[in-house]
Length: 113
Image (cartoon, rainbow, N blue to C red; front, side, top):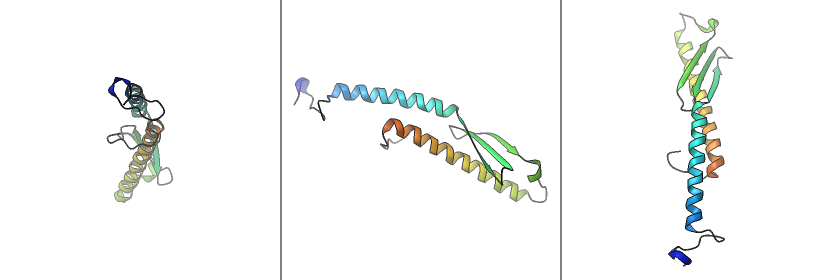
């Protein structure tokens, strides 16, 4: 055991340094999450006829419909286009989240992030 009763980790890394690194990572994760939560991510469907915008929390914040796609005789198509655009925007938001958080965690899977 090393001085202080803690075993050494790796090339001279002690428990104190490890805790400092973890605290730094936690602050970086919190800051990155705040930035991600405020970003808006958009996706379209139907060749741009429907646009869905979600924030980093994956909340739908805006939907834009082209007048041409609003057909009272074909509501199902419009519903499908909306679902498709929202799902794609959420997928992009998750992808961006995973990418940014992965830069901090080095790809380590931390439950809840």
